[in-house]
Amino acid sequence: MDTIRRCLRAGILLLAVLLSLAQPDPGYAQARGSDPQRSERPASTAFHINQQRLWDTLQKLSEFGRPPGAGFEGGVTRLGFSAEDLAARSYVAGLLRAAGLTVRVDPAGNLFARREGTENLPVLLFGSHIDSVPNGGNFDGQVGSMGALEVMRTLQERGIQTRHPLELVIWVNEEGHHFGKGVFGSAAAAGLLGTDILDRRDSDGLTLADWLRRYGQDPSKFAQAHIAPGSLAGYLELHIEQGGILDERGIPIGIVQGIVGINWWTCTAEGFANHAGTTPIDRRADAFAAAARAVLAVREEVRAGPGRQVGTVGYARVEPGARNIIPGRVEFPVELRDLDADKVARIWARIEQRFQKIALEENVKINCVPLSRDVPARTNPAFQQAIRDAARALGLPTLDLPSGAGHDAQNIAHLAPIGMIFVPSRGGISHSPREYSSPDQVASGAEVLYRSLLLLDQHLHRP
Ligand SMILES: [Zn+2]
Image (cartoon, rainbow, N blue to C red):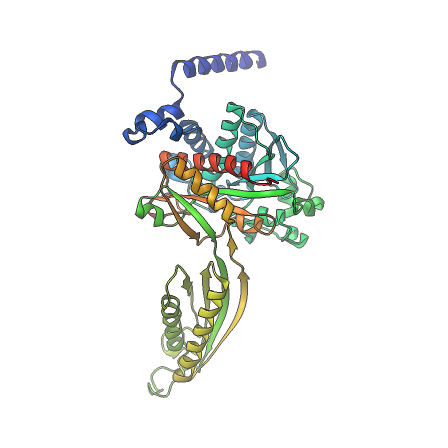
């Protein structure tokens, strides 16, 4: 039986080799021929990465966690720490080994593939994640991960020697849907997590430690996932924008200025619950009316100045919550995001002033307590420049923009300089089966990643 299978496999392989010899390299065909604009490009702007291979791999990856009966357009459910995720990671590990790289998994479940450099230098790290949200898309994280794989394959094929050792990383459980902790793997790598998180239990009664064992790891070694500061030269991540700016403006490459800080407060408006029929309209302490004015004040203060800062009140919990009772208490959150922590502090100070004025006018008390504060993570100017130079050499327009979403890079910023490349998301849609970036856009991002890495390898750690 085994012999038959082996013969069959050898036959298929031989056929594949013959077919590939008969056709021109699909990557170059795409880059040079299919698009009339590109065919007129000088040879120096031709893509080194293989666009077709990258797209094919992205499609193949989408089979892990694909809804039954759906195609590539049907999205994916591949939660961090799940059977689908584990199978996808083994598949990717196999591809990395087949490319001739040394693969290892750290005790937090992050997958690394290493390619040696010619000098004794710290590692240039690049990659992304392949887990998704429930009913997610095939591009968030996966473009950066398969783009990184394509970069490694291209370096191997072309026999390029780099000064720095290169490592590709597939972070684990970036979305954090499972176990309620986003950017989990990179947080472990940056030494930001205590071991208490291993005791968290999921709805099946399994702990995170149980899942790490399923991923072949020893949870008692969890702390060893921490990457030693100084061992990284930097980290570069390719990702879809997850917003609509690049798509709207028709710009293929975004140079991320940084990942915004996310600041959360929980506020309560305390009034007095009373009869909705017998209490005169001017003698009320209506907590919901006050909270409603507070919501609008947040928006006004965020909009009051120039910039890309955003502010949101995502819910209101109204008590007692009955049709015929004046609301006595409302809990509502305030979230502010920006690249500039000082600006956020200034906006918040103005919001609090407005809240106190509203409280006075509405005869209620408004109180806010800080819940969490993620500091902004700026990208490194040398990394931004490498991306800019790489894109310019390819004739690809760029736009500098912040990332409004969190990414693993923000954790690695605690260890080393970071850079991020964005490619357009159609309609700005993500965390949905409808998220999409075209084969050209994905390939452009991967090519810029390839060239940026080589530029950084040349320029970093020169005496
Ligand atoms: Zn992502």
